[in-house]
Amino acid sequence: MEFLTYNNLAAFEKEPVPNLPNSNFEWSFKFLPIEKRNAIFTIYNLLSYIDNIVDIDNYFSKKNDVELIQHKLNRISRWIDIIDELYDDSKNTSSYLAPLKYAIKRFNIPNQYFHFLFNGFRRDLHQNRYQSFDELKEYMFEVASIVGLITIEILGYKYQSTKEYAINLGYALQLTNIIRDVKTDKDRGYIYLPLNDLQKFKYTEEDLINEEYNDNFVELMGYQSQKAKEYFHKARTLLRPDERKSMFAAGIMDEIYFRLLEKIELMDYNIFKNKIKVSNSHKFMIALKHFLSLQLFISRLKSIRS
Image 1 (cartoon, helix red, strand yellow):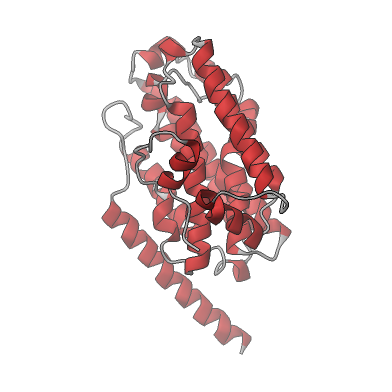
Image 2: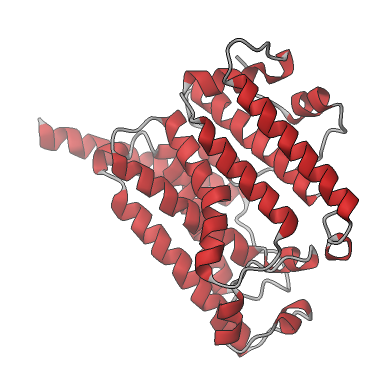
C-alpha cells in the first residue's frame, strides 16, 4: 500500500494540487520500515493538505471575509465527515483515500484524535490572538500533541508515559515553530505569542507588526525559548529507556527542532532578518548521529542484561 499524496487528496476533492514545502518531519521518518513510513507520510500529507486549506488567502486584510472563511469551514467539516466514513466498514472508500483507511485500520488510530485536530484547524479560522499561555496550550494540544499521539500509534509503544512523552514533545515542537515563524505568522495576521507575555516584557502588538527588534523583544523570545526547552526536557524524562528504539523517529525530530531552537538563540532571536532553519545536510547528520548513538545504547543495554 502506497502513501497518500497531495495529488490523491486534490483529485478526491476536485481541487488544485497545492505546492507545499517539505517539512522537518520528513527527515525523521526516512529510516522507518516501509509500512510505518507510508502510514506516517499518509497522515502528515493529509494534515499538511488540510492546514493549507486554512492558510490559502488567509491574510489579515481578509479575516472579515465571511464568505471565504465559511467556504473553508465547509471544506473542513466535509473532511471530518469523510474521516468518520473511513471508520465505517459499511461505507465504500474512494481509491484515492485507500492509503488513509489502511493506515487508520492497520494502526488503530482513534477517531477522536482527528476530531481534536480538525477543531484546531477550525480554531485558526476564527482566532488569531491568544491572551494567555494556557489558552495557547489548548491550541497546541489540538494541532501538535495530537499529531504526536497519532505518530506513536504508528510507531508502537508499551507505556502510558510514552503518551505523555508525545504530548510534551508536541508542545516543544510547536513552540519552536511559533518562535521561528513569528514574522511569517504576523504577516498572515496571526500572533501566537501570548498577549500576556507581550505585556510582561513591554512589547506591544504594534511593535511586532512594525518588526521592532529591541531588548524587550529579545527578552520576550528568550522567555518563549525557555518554555520550549522545558517541554523538550520533560518529554525526554518521560521516555523509558526500552522505548527509545520504537521512538527512534520521534527522537530525530526532537534533535532537529532542538537544534533549530539553538540556532534561533545564537541569532539573538532576530527572526525578522531571515527565516532561520536547519540545512538538509545538517538534518542528515543529526539523523545519522541519532541512529549511531541508538545502536550504541542498544548494544550496551544488551550487554548489561546478558
